[in-house]
Each structure stands twice: as structure tokens, then as C-alpha cells.
Length: 220
Image (cartoon, rainbow, N blue to C red; front, side, top):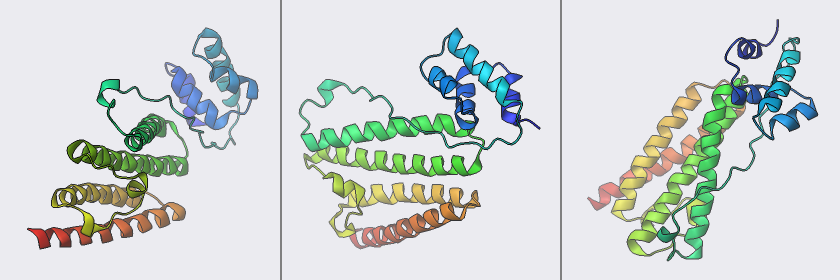
């Protein structure tokens, strides 16, 4: 029996973007892959259709992981950043890159036939959005206090004792949200590798949340 998602695409409205994602998962013709990655015109669509019709003849195809190319940079209003120091601009640029990656993953995940590939992409999406949220925290701190938080402080766990009450309350709320998302992902996966990663991340986050809440109770 042919791959159901390929047959469904051929019998539907044949959306080019969806078909391209499917061909990248199952197709291997280097010429067709090169063509469909360079445009969306009639010629590109005809080559995509040709490739999908050939794939529909096979039943033993295994989906390949989709390669995520670097997204184009997001535009920022120049005047908002004209006085920003280089470390903040570096944080902003990385934040924009990771957010664009997350958006691309969000669009692509529903089109992946492999549960393992969907889960791996979803975990990467969560990591990207964690970084985006932490970056906004650093940017907001700079705008409010003029203090620049180094990148290493975003990527590593900051000592709870160094946080202000406002920052403690913000992090408590954010970490609780991340914990809920990780628990939901853990319930929905059968992959041992993903379970190990999620459990380890949950343990770290729950430990930090406990310490943050303890510190909040000391201050209020």
C-alpha cells in the first residue's frame, strides 16, 4: 500500500508547501529536491507533482528527518535599539534567530509523518522558546535598570539568592509553565531517548522552582 499522506496529497488541493515537505521526507531524487527548493512556480510544481506520483508507487518508504535551514533575520525597528550596548544586541539577534526557528518548526511539525521526528522537533521548539523567554527577561532588565545580563547568565542557571523579588515571581511563573509543557510532552512520548531528556529537564526545573518559591516565602 502506498504512503497514505502522499496519496492524500495527490487527491487533495495539492498545496505546494505541504507537498514539498512530504517530498523532503520521502523523496531522494537530487534534481527534484534542488528544483522544489528554489521556487514555487508552475515548473517547480510540475516537478514536485512528477516526484510525488513516482513516490506514490512505493509502499516501503521511510520518512527522513527534515533539515531546518537558517531562517532569515527578523527586522527590528532601528530606533528602539540605537542606544543598546553590544551584549544586548547580541542577545536580541540570537533571540530573533531562535524565534524564527521556532516558528518554522511549529509550521513543519504537523506535516511530519514520523512520531519520533515530530517529538524531536517539538523538544527543539521548546528549547528555542525557553531561550526567547529568557532573552526577553535580559532585555527587559536592561531597559528597566540599565544592567546588562551576560549571555552566559541566560544560558546557565542564575543563583536564586541573586534574584530580586520581582525576578523571582517572574521566573516562578515561567518555570511552572515550562514544567507543565514538559509533563505533557512526557505523557505523549514512548521514545526512551526523549523520556530521559524530558525527565532530566523536569528534575532541574522542579528543583529550581522549589528553591525560588522558598526564597519568595522568605522575602514576603
